[in-house]
Image (cartoon, rainbow over the protein chains, first blue to last red):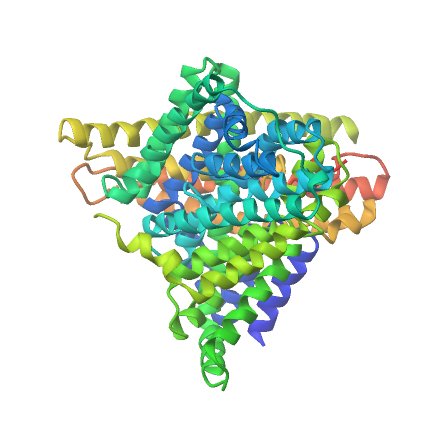
Amino acid sequence: MTVFAGLGTLFFLLAIGTPVGFAMMVSGMLGLYLVGGWGMVGGILSTAPLSTVSAYELITIPMFLLMAEFVLVSGVADDLFKATAAWVGRVKGGLGMATALAGAGFGAICGTSTASAATLSSTSLPAMLKQGYEPKLAAGVVAISGTLAMLIPPSIALVVYGLLAEVNIGGLLIGGVIPGLIVTAAIMLTVYFLAWQDPSRAPAGPKVPWAEKIRLLKVIGPTLVLFGMVTGVIYSGIATPTEASALGAFGGMGLAIWYRRLNKTTLSRALLRASHGTCMIAMILVGAHVFGYFFTLTQVTQNLVSFVGGLEVPRWVIMSLILFGYIILGMFMDQIAILVLTVPVVLPLIKSLGYDPLWFGVIKIVTAEVGMITPPIGLNCFVVARYSGRPVAEVFHGTFPHFIAHIIVIALFVIFPELILWLPSKMGN
Amino acid sequence: MQPLFKTLLGALNTLERLAIRIVLVMMFAVMMIVAADVFMRYVFNAPFSWAYDLIALYLMAGIFFLGLSQAYASGAHVSVDILQQQFSPSGKRLAEIITAAVGLLAFAAMTKLGYERALDAFISKDVLAGAIPWPTWPSIALMPLGAGLLCLRLAVTLAGHLGSLMSGQDLVPLPHGGHGTEEFSE
């Protein structure tokens, strides 16, 4: 009964648009009150918020957010597409593939998907349209390429999962590298396939002289340095993810200074946006913490785990159902909200089935990528539509082939877990 | 009623701007301290022993609690607004009233509990066990400060939407949604 009161309140508040963190905190408080009275509510409410925000790993969130803001300020990402386009623009569907590569490059220095989609919309989309690309195809590849930022480290989404699931954050971030490359390849293959089906959709780009190609490579330098400062130091074990994130933010600021884009206005705007993002995520984590206490006391999760454990079905069926559920949820809910609401329930289940939580985290983020491009609330499609002035429906339509490709990639990761787990196992300490 | 709300909102904005300025400085400080700490450790083998206590105890708590209210006011807290978007304007106001009311209850409790805990820590001169005995009360005090500021914001929002519903005037603006899609859609 208490379970339903707590869950009912939660779903009601979520439905009327209460911020997710508030909704979880309030319904968690109600649940705790029903279980143990005011004493229990007071005990948890007076300690949970402070202990949540002073967790060492949480520092990673503001620093990665800040790094993304500085990278945007520096404008270094604007040139990424020019460079990749010069190199692969000549092949069939080349500019579309260049967009995927630029998305991967951007993902390597920036952890938020919408920032990436916005940058790509203002650089690669006009170039493709000018080249005579089918608008649907062009917009679709931009929207999906933006999502690579969630998977390729640095990644805010992976850090949030790590905080919730108490999985090694360094391992998670490194675990995103190979899947990120595979997804990039899948996007490129999808574009190639579409261009092969109907070459008029994606005309080849003009020839770029070698001198120009070499000159454009100069953007790769700063990108690689920043990537090394974060992912490199985490992989080699030189610094913890928390330290690496601050190094990344610092490096991002250095870039913004180097390109002479940093001034009082851009600096305070970057800090402000990063602090808003931090507050939002920390509030959700605080809410999840309070709600989590209540949920643990009700033993819903244990009952669910033993129920599923008693089912006579192969574990891959259950896994497929979970992933299918995530893709459906992703159509209607924000990805961070999905993480906090589901991880406490789904993770024990995953563990009891014998799956690796690190592997599951990376797969979960790939389903989140899908959620960013599926109607009705696929955020990246709205970003692309806004920046390009194209109708949202057209962008959603254009992402459909990538949706299919992502489903295949997810199946691949389920069948071959080593694709995700191999690189983290090679990490230094 | 409109002039009253204008004054209230103006005062609240001033308070929040002050709080957020502190947040921005703290944010910058976290970045510089952690980066310098890594540098000192690798180049001079002399890390700052105080860095993480300072950040975890004061700076992260400050960034979260002092930024809480401003983040709410600017719609930065993510929500599932797919249903709310279908509501009529008065329906939206009603939803906001419920949110503000339950939020006010929860954060008022947090403010009260935080205040009592901070007072306790202050009187008993609690310090953190470690190389530097940092006092804990300023860190705990950030909780009632930030949650209290959010309570003020929620109270004004609540009263504003109630007043708007009753008088038909637009005392406080309607929510423009949580996760920013409407900002992006035409």
